[in-house]
Image (tube, rainbow, N blue to C red; front, side, top):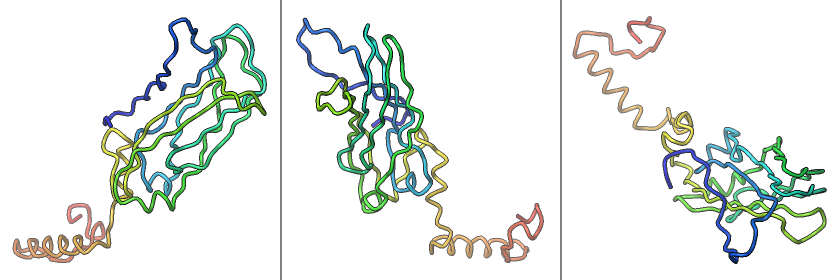
Length: 193
């Protein structure tokens, strides 16, 4: 996967040359990669969802349904009263429920697919469909600078034994240079910190 945050284009569907593109299409933007820290910090996975009617007729009572494989997100359905001809409908409530237990069990990165379909309410026939690929990261993997870089703070482990070794070495260096070996942070003043 790339390190940028660009939207992945709609999945390509093979059509016969004479077939016209469907009048209804789905535009979706999701994070390109995620891990348990996204769940724990309530970071949105679905960033934009738009139903676009490129046709000449209005679509009434449309259901948008989101599913994933593997099932890292609970299935979700949005009900839309109407999408008038030539209009775009921006879905406003984008919250989806992540499976924290599943994300917590990941020990290595895994590919995932989110599928979003549109159908007339009560009908199994799809009016539109799109798929997005993303990467599920292990609970101890950071998504990188191109994917919400501030999430690196979720990986700070102040009680890790390595931190104690670094602090001990810093205190030894301070003492060797004629300073106090105590590490009392900002309590010792701005210069001491």
